[in-house]
Image (cartoon, rainbow, N blue to C red; front, side, top):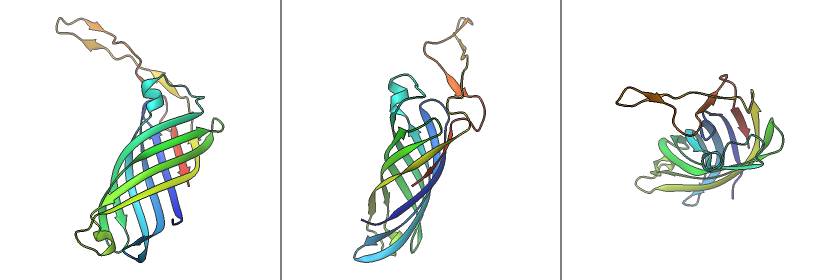
Length: 173
């Protein structure tokens, strides 16, 4: 168990699909040696609560699995893949707590070793802060044109952000 630090910025593009960019730094051990480790990666998040149910801005807990890619650095730079579960716990309309359970995988050259994969399992806890209007969603008409040239509106709702800053968040852990 080693101390970790995490800083990120993200945006919910729709009520269930989001992106984020993360910077992480921590100390780790690999084959009996201690290393300082830093990474920068982008993730694609899928909010299961909003995808399966309807979007509720005042929901207390949300879970979002994600996948991502980026670079990690210790002795060498190396492409790295991420996957995890991003859990948020709403405290107020502008901030809340989060628990990020993640794993990352790389070839292991990051520590000067060749051919031995490095897999990291991490848990981050911290706070998130919402920028702009957290509920700034607007309905959009999505017209579909059939082969007989008649248009119709499909079932369900298509929602997008009203302003760019709406539904943007910052995480510190």
